[in-house]
Length: 420
Image (cartoon, rainbow, N blue to C red; front, side, top):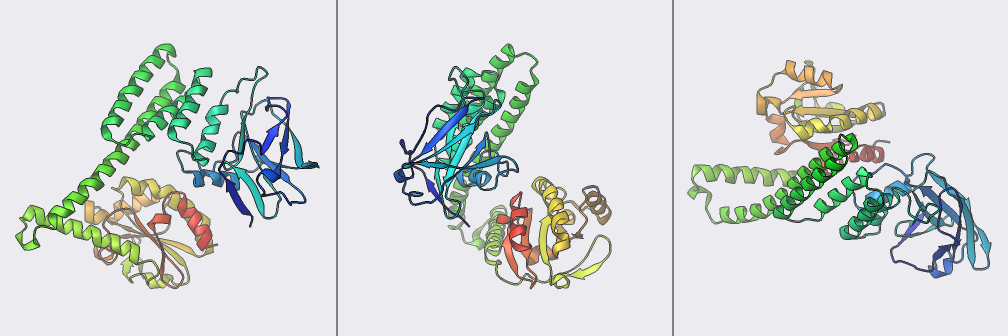
């Protein structure tokens, strides 16, 4: 595997083009490896590049490391490479810029051990013949700014410049409003952002009447607002939780009134569940017997020799239902490679639903694996205090992963590492 070296400093003279990249024209790149010392002694240097983006393995508001996975794992047909020619101390290459491109990103490599990736790849706008950045040039650059560790304020300024030149770039406007909300750290500031974007859309809808692209980003902006509400309320919840625990610690359990004692017991159950989740990895999974909703009697140890995902969930649980497509995809992809799922439903505990209801629900969702309607015994054995809770059990019956790497797209990534 290549040893990838990330160069974060802005190296003004490390590379330069004879011209700026212009749509439809040839862009000449010169690279001086002595200014970084990374590829200085290389016998050959290859230019690896892509237009607009490398891949979509990761998208949305992610961190630098997540986004760089797109560069490491580009979509098929997105990345190109070209051997550079040496001229004195410089390496040279020429790239034909497509008319449709908006951003050029690239890095240099010896193809064996080292890559030169300033800002997690070098980035250049594509310009028109009047030397103005084309539509989406600055908008597409925002992901690379995230990779480079640029501040939210810098990213917002980049989007403001894009919107100034291209007022009808509604996706850039959505990103702009999203970044504004992402930088606030208290509820009152978020309320002000809501007032700002509501006025913002009022003005835009006066100018762009009956524009469905605009209406769609208005809906998406409210989605982001709700996400940030959750983020900030959770922060406040954690803060208050610390005060709450401190107050409870001052009262002996036998001196607590019933209402306070119930809260105390719930807190203790949560703490036990969290400790269990963290400590169970590497240990034998607690054995349990069960009857599936199809009437089949089994026990966990029957599945030794296979990897088993234990999925504690409920049809009443929104996040659980949201995970179903990931589970269906994973089961279809890995079931022939020694992978099984046992979904332990809490429907009877929380909603008194019966087996017929659960069977109808799982059939409709194409959940064609083992399902159990638990009365509480299995939940107690695993100290479940929230849903969904997931554990991955190996062929020997040991828990090898907990839910931190078993939800969303990380489930598939984890199973590729473990099962394949």
